Image 1: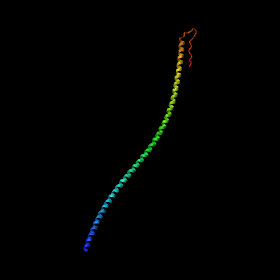
Image 2: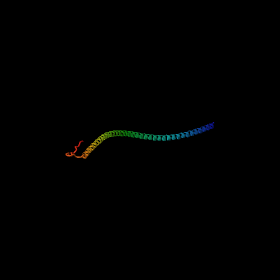
Image 3: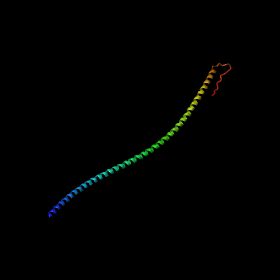
Image 4: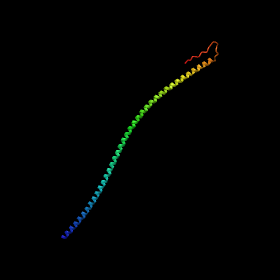
Length: 150
């Protein structure tokens, strides 16, 4: 019976050793999986940090571009107002020049009418002088210069 108990003990020890070996192998596999997962987590964290840094950089660029856009809009508004003021000033100047041109055109027309009238009067006077010169002189009459009428 002792031999039988020894045999059972030996079988139990072998079974225990086999279970321990299987358990140690399972633990080693689990530790390997844990190490792999830890490495994956580390890589994932690095990728997330890189993505976060890139996102912050993009946000900073977007913010800077937005500020530049706002500044450009303000500059454009100011330039438009300046151009509108300049246009209004030029329009007033143009209106003044047009009014002066109309006045001068009227003055020129008036002067042309006066010149035409003076020419007619001059032609009439010249005609009268020619007629007077063409008339024969009578005895006792002297030639008198014509008085100028204007």
